[in-house]
Length: 311
Image (tube, rainbow, N blue to C red; front, side):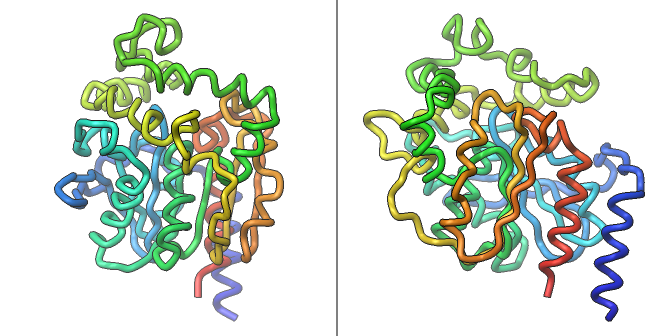
């Protein structure tokens, strides 16, 4: 009986309570997990079952500030900087950014919390990594939450047959072939902290991003694409219609329908590759960064969805 009451209270709180202040500086703690000599920075707050959040490009742990605030009362929330970004190590060489290393980074962060599994949340490249953690280390994933990154089989289908998706992927092909100093690599100019943060509309928040990107490795950012993105020479883990392991954990997917990089058609048939329940939530007015563009929808849905999956 109390379990049902608790779930109801969590749902009511999510719907009617104002969002908490997104400034987490006074309550988060910083930590580092070690993966074979590469230190992965993360922030941590809250108490309860572990939730690990993985950002995409170009981003860092701060992208999850709204979701951290929403979950911290009932969960231990850890948001990591992927290698190459912000305060994490920035190893040199494309091979350092191959998917097995990125998966191992997440595993190191989970183990560093003194537990064997977690709810794994990923957006964009973080979503690509989260899918692979679920495929390669399913015993470490209690629940899987993906934001704006279709299952690799769905991505492969759309990249092979969807002209809009093929056009949308043009930027990635430029990243694979180019370098941060190329005059037209990013929005008609070279990569700088300012151009990389230009998608952040709030000027105060953008200052945080500029500082984080000035600490980051632009070559490292591009190496995610060079090492893993589909190309004629690359058997990509991001878009591949090979027989991926069927997933046994519940899956929650968010997708901002105004995403100009990843087509929503890639979501079709996701349920055919998962043996557990699949919940898909679309945000019609949100773009690629759905966790920020539709922060209330994402945060409240995550609260409700996770509250119904606790033992």
